[in-house]
Amino acid sequence: MIPVEKALDAILDHVRRMGTERTDLLHSLGRVLAEPVVSGRDHPPWNSSAMDGYAVRHGELSQASEQHPVTLEVIEEIAAGALPQKTIQPGQASRIMTGAPVPEGADAVIRVEDTRGEGNRVRMVQPVEAGDHIRLRGEDIRAGNIVLAQDSTISSAEVGLLASVGRSHVQVYQRPRVAILATGNELADLGDAFSPNKIMNSNGYAVAAQVIEAGGVPVLLGVAKDTREELVDRLTQGLSADLILISGGVSVGAYDFVKDVLGELGVTMAFWKVAMKPGEPLAFGMLQAKPVFGLPGNPVSTMVTFEQFVRPALRKMQGHALLFRPVIEAVLMERITKKPGKTHFVRAVVKKTGDRHEVWTTGNQSSGVLTSMVKANGLLIFPSESGEIEKGQTVKVQLLEKNFSSQAVPGY
Image (tube, rainbow, N blue to C red):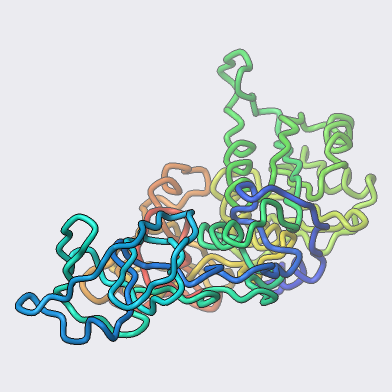
């Protein structure tokens, strides 16, 4: 067995970025840019009004008040999307809408709330300063500037920024296609006839959901029986994928043939066991440049090992800089024990109480109890060298993708 940290290092050393592809703007959400984005124009492209109001010469309103209003002639109305047709002269103003270009001669905008309209004349009852309520040309973006660097992750704000510079398509790193094979004579797939000696293939679908959550594209290969022939046949069907995941068959049982079959297919293995619980029988290797993972067969073991090893690999393949779930510190609200020698990832519930986080285990930690994973919003990291953690001690908790409000710090 190798430690968790060494296993993770070995995986990330082997994994490489995917190629790139061009995608439309909305489908770029969550992706990583494979090019810098340069603006071809200033934004805003002109001095524009930040308010509905009137474009004015500020000096004429320096003494304006309710008691001594300044009355100006309204010479035109400028709607958003329209261009001014007239220049503001002394004694004049133009009615202007938010986002519309400020006309020549004006150097401020007064809010409509600070005016009193009278037909084609308007009374100004507040003073303004030069530049009030005007967005200057290029104050957000200058033409020729890089607005998004290569390797930026695209969130909703980046989508808005890309739209503002007119980019309908961008170059991003590809999403890896992940072949997922569940193994075991005891498994039935969804839609199969009910049999009292079978259990449902939950692993295939849980892992597929984790792949989607990590940004990949799952390719379900179904269930393979515990025979060399069927394993070879099913895995061969998945060789066109970018990463291969096998759930089950990687332990040392009489019917665990995955190790032999991977060897027959030409997979070079890096390791077969990791000093962790759940998830000790974890295999990783490479088929040429294609990562291959053998995950344990128990449902929780499968999901936990995916979180620790497969998810970071998938994120690296997509060009992400942040590979890991955030980890926070929390106060343990119960005593827990284990044998030293393995890192345990304990299913747990974290809550914010006052100015601190508190954490409890979800109860039964058997690797077959999937409901304990459903209850968990975090994995308490019980260090390898430790044998017990007392109630009240501070521990590290890896947050899962559940509703949780926290100031989180990334990394282990």
